[in-house]
Image 1: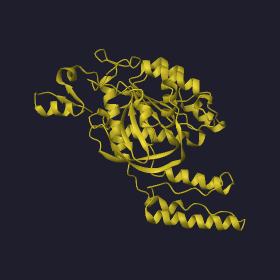
Image 2: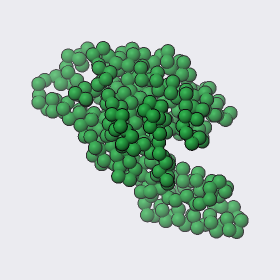
Image 3: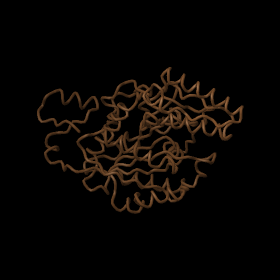
Length: 356
């Protein structure tokens, strides 16, 4: 939560110049303290539905130990669901109509699985555009994750994602390129982020429309960018919400696809993710799988129990810091009435005062 500048101590002024959240004492005295309401548009398929909830809920909840958060998950009717996924949605999720009536302070939009070469051909395209347009006019800030970033860039700016040639898969080093922006205030200037994607929106594509790149990687490209106003749309291309085991589970799934003949090649190990001993265990497992297939014998199970204690998480703290900055600034900008995006004195074209 923010500092209150209750004296003329120069340190307060300096921290504010550096992008820190420092409230004037007169505003702090009259500030209405209340819980925050954050929406989660979960577009993930059934097997990942609950895990994605937990990942983003955890990221929000752990980022700030003082504020109280009400999380409002919802999805799109056009996304295909099996009986189990549909039952989960019907029992626990809200409808978009209810969300619109009650309002949100902030919104997170997850990624999704796609089957079409053009995102505009996906069944979620038009309903997602409706949610994004509503959020732009009624929500303080919207955070887009991976595929959602690609969809919003195409829908709002006409920028189509580009295939990288090979899958970007692993944990990659990133650098903060604009240290004065409030979203990265107090965050390590270099930190890791997991990625798992075939496609990419480049720095040039973001900057062509006045969007600002805040964090990028020589290997993985842009991770974090913001809309022209500096805050109302936040774009992730990586997956800072991932658990320590998320990439391992994805690797396990791909091994299963190879065993079932759904992919021709044995999947490579995620880059920069595994310690040497863990990589050696999986290399040995690969040999056993390939030998079993040659003998037409059942493939051995992935030795997860041997790996769990050997997985390092090098991204979670930085992810919490960025999300904490995001939530903290939403809290300072949002209206007491969560159906209205900003308190009266805020300029929607420069809500953080950052562009000035």
